Length: 64
Image 1 (cartoon, helix red, strand yellow):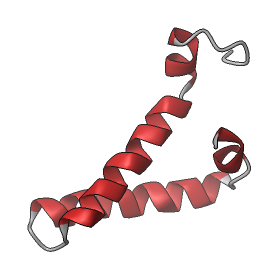
Image 2 (tube, rainbow, N blue to C red):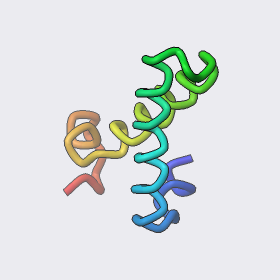
Image 3 (cartoon, one colour):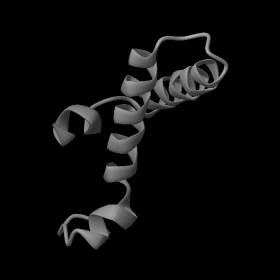
């Protein structure tokens, strides 16, 4: 699954991150359904998991 996200353009990742943040804010204001919050939590968890820090904690070799 990580390969899928590695192949995405960084600009596209930033757009998805912005949409994720907008979803969080909208959910907090009760403007969006709970399913939107669930997708946002999943996306944010994936982005955090991909960071070099977390990969280093997990002992991944390619985390530099």
